[in-house]
Image (tube, rainbow, N blue to C red; front, side, top):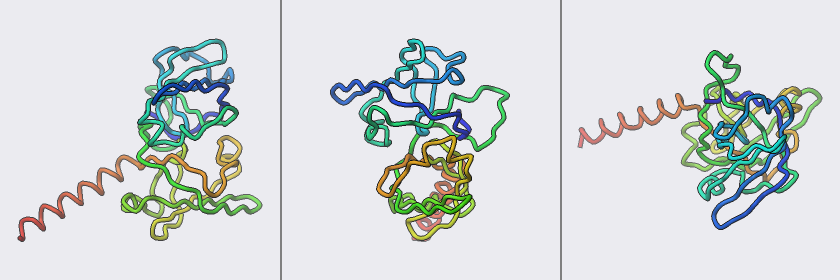
Length: 206
């Protein structure tokens, strides 16, 4: 489980490509290395990956074809920075909201609006996921727990404070970039449950 509170960003220092498979080597700072070992779960831009090798500050992760297709991790290059969150431990403070590390889809950045103490980013999402997006609802954006601002048809925005921009890689996002999206599990469960009930009632009337 993750909380959506990104601990730091880390650079990709090597990408080993094979057929329908990649290994990413990430350079961790000392603050991220404590207790890390093979088999540990770490979120990269919100996507839960498993540690396959640790060598000093270099930590390796394997990515299957499904992960490369569904998330933006297949877009990374050597030098790209990813948002990192270590898996939550029992008793940790939940500063954001509960997240699974399972990316549902990607959204495209369509506009970045900067002001003195705020940054607003607009995203466009696939129409079939629009039903999960509500103003003031929780959402995971590249692993960051955020509150949805305004919603317009298949677009929505979030407002970012300087601390979020400093701690994450959202400060380098531009229109056209793909962003990993995880819908709040409770929101998804409620929407899908209501849909099933409504479909059942309509079927009964026929």
